[in-house]
Length: 340
Image (cartoon, rainbow, N blue to C red; front, top):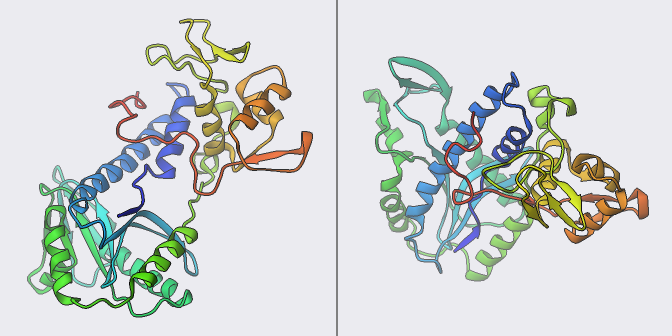
């Protein structure tokens, strides 16, 4: 049973929001495009692994994608699999080329096109998540469930290489197509339930309540200001996509292609939260959407049913917990549409 859906990462959504509003010739644009490609690659790798997990019996396994918890510091697991017999943390890597693991090294070397580069060792990464998740279970007084961890390479074309004295890594580093076999191996090791069904359900609800997404300061990361980005509502016609649509008679209208939409502002409001921060006022929204009245902006915010604090002009609106207002997935993105 999928308890937490696989979604595009917040960082990928932020990159998309920036690229929608960054002029084509902006000097930072190639950096953002490179980062988005990396986030999308990770997402498609997890989609591939999710395919294999779909064959598991729904009533026995609870599946959490992108679960972000807090130990002493926050940590995010690509996939957490929980049953009454064991839990399994999965770190997914979608990396091309040859991956070289050296015994005792904190680095992994990737060889591609006759070039080598050092990368963080995913085995060490998933070990840290294993430790943090066990600490989290202990803090929440959930006892008895053994926790395993794996690194799953999503592409069979990726070569995994290590030295003869380090063959034990193949117990922890596998290909996605071997994942079901590995889970059956764990089922043989842990044949008896370690927690009751009620405890499993309690654990599941506790995990969901503890999950929290984080929206990093993307402007600081790329050293951008408001003047670097295009404000306004983008035309919803994919053949036009120009800025800005005008808000006339409770609808958005494009002067260029004559497109009309009542909901074109929703992606723009989502962009604002992803780029500028966790709250927005009606005055800020009116400026960002380039409409002539904060009162109209207030109506748009109220229609979105966003949580708010304060009253009247001082009201601040914010996103519901763990929510992206206008999320993307593999079906809503055209290949290459955000790249120059």
